[in-house]
Length: 118
Image (cartoon, rainbow, N blue to C red; front, side, top):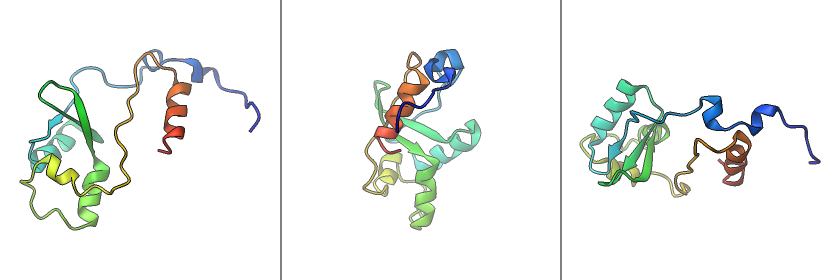
């Protein structure tokens, strides 16, 4: 497609647009039991939880899609399993976590999502 006019908003950063959460982020650890993660979804009204290691580094993400997948595959009979164990039921197509930064423009982020075919 030839150059399509872009709205001015595409050149603004996430910070300028007020998009994102940068403090008090609800997270889980790899060892967090699944029932605790489900409670955090409800309590914090979020659609995804970063899975962090002991240093606080994001190593994965547990999303509502993963919960729906558990239900669809009927593998939800043991909610005591860890988040890591639950993530083993994730389909093979998952290729990792895409990150967006506050200083990046909306255009940059949309391009990243398109390239990753999200």
